[in-house]
Image (cartoon, rainbow, N blue to C red; front, top):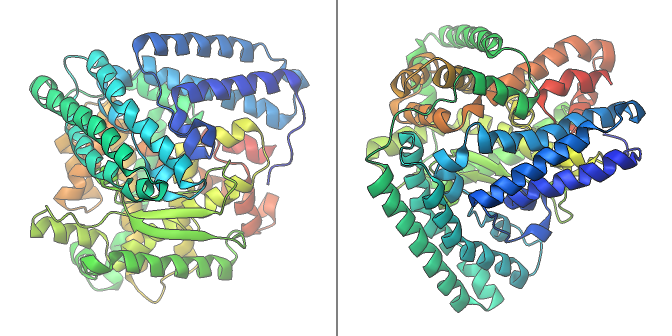
Length: 541
């Protein structure tokens, strides 16, 4: 665990201003961290407002650059870089990837009510007030979207925005129990009516005005992709070096999958088919996930892989309607500033009744017993939920508490899948490692697809075939993975983070930690979730 931060008045002042400035642009991010003074705040995304934000960010970067780092401790010198990236990441989004001009999901994705519905952190009246504020902000935000979005947009972005937007009315309806508890059902009905009308109008506009003109072009390009690696992860290694590491990991995992299939006297397709066929029925997916939550927690404690706090509380629920287009399973963890019970919500996406029987069976096959347990390791123990329990208990700097590196977060969770297999989870079932390796192949292909789609002219069809042939995925999930890479190039983060942690473990476990795996893992989680490019520096401090 990080020790208390030594005072550094000059840096302390600019740190506070930088964090406050970030939350002007991203108030929902603050709410997710547990800062409920931002409840219900909807950002002003008009061009004049974001131009003002840009000017403020650049001024703060200038002040940060003027801090005398020679007077700082090693940890605070690292924080200077974190604070730089806190601002440079959003500046990249505004001016390099130009999300507000190119991506309609930027507007639709800001209306989640989950933070107010999932946890009873305040009385119903207070949380309901935040819900109404969000809903009342919907028409203005979507009007800004129509003003700012360019005439020609990437088609994958438009398609997915239409899918996400279609799920918003059902998500808004999920506030009805909270409205009833607050005695304000009529107020919710009025706010919902205006918000849903604005969503319908925006989707109709996208469908009529932007979809017919949409282009297959979406790539960041090589220079922007290289910059993305730095502003998100502090990584300066050339992306082609990362691609080669991904190819090597893909080859290792493919070889191991072939070994597992041979040991079962099966071909790889037959091995995976038999694994996939062993799945729970649709009605029992959530109950199975709950059973695996308890099993994996007991396993982590028994094997002493990482410290598990005495107080834990993880619920399993269906993924909210608006999030199902993007997520198979996910974790909504307690934020680092949350002071209430340590509630984590493990969301699992159910079968969609609108799918064909073939599609429904394909989805259930992706939730076979071995894979669902592997997903539970990733999302709950010792993955995301346990990671965020450590994050919440960290007494480090403000910068550490607000920085969430995708590669540190997802890299840890992906690493724990392999860790669990190394220590025997599911050893009685030959498919347990098969599921872990299958998921590793998926993450390898995500890294390769991200680089290919954004730097090398890879098409969506080629990316889909990559997931089908190299990761052995069926057509529907392969298509979804390829589309995800167009708007989320950062899904390289799983493999990038895992390989970084494995490299650090291989070099330092014996020499620095005396072979004590618990201490190594607790040290990693005590850093918070900093850029993965700083891992070496942090471990050497």
